[in-house]
Image (cartoon, rainbow, N blue to C red; front, side, top):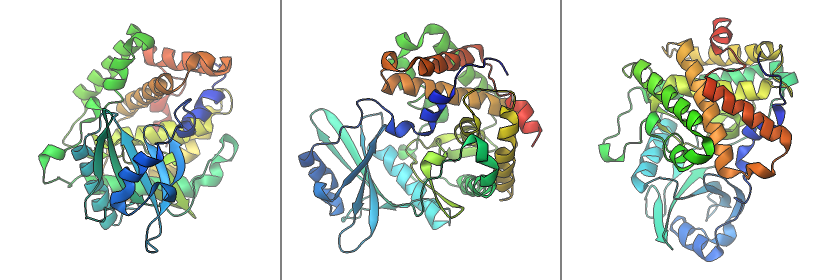
Length: 362
């Protein structure tokens, strides 16, 4: 299985990374908040701060008995108003088609979202229904108990992908970027090139180039969520509700599958070390997930090699995220050791998980 270095500290943070960013939990000033949420009939005093990572997220109770809602405030991060509007239109369409997603809520004036420029920064505000249920957090030793949840997550993603195939927004100017143009692979890597190192950046570029050359954009391709994981789901019983489409983009359905494999199966199956039993712990949840996914009738072809490359690219994205949001030098040595293994995995384009073998056993 390769290195038996301590992984758990790093990958536990992967599954809870939205709350882990050092010095990123500051809230917007109340006066600014008032301006940002006023179009929804809300005030700063109505908001309960939840977290800040890529965006600031709040919970609020809508006026006139409108129920609980979630407010998302984006600051910078390469998102335009039209990109956010495209996201919200797609999510609204999915909700209307019966996909279990948290529908966007319009402003009092009927707008999809609002933007405000102040102090050289541009803010984009969106509001959503709150997902019913609660988050779940399977641990490595009890994954078989969550077979139903993994199966339902696969079913939800299959339903989403089926609805993505025919979806064509009317206004092409608002299209989201393609997966290889995402800020996570372009702006973030470029901004941190010196810290990441030449070999790491070259390997990421090679993975992207190989995938672009190999993908068939006429099959299993469309708008994808881009960040499907238990972090972005609530479960009402065993029924999942998906939210946080901020990273949605045009891409292969295989990348959504690879993200689930990495975030919600691999990272959950780790038990302190990447040990010899890791594959065996990953197999039951993966089999349940794929059974639910293909139970929807989706015709996605599971190209094991491509999923393996997307799996490595996901590790690269998480590695960059840590270096962008954390003071790495102040982290525990075990965490830094884990980051070093992640770096070597990406640079060598190999991994402790044999994705091809794993998929062939399902």
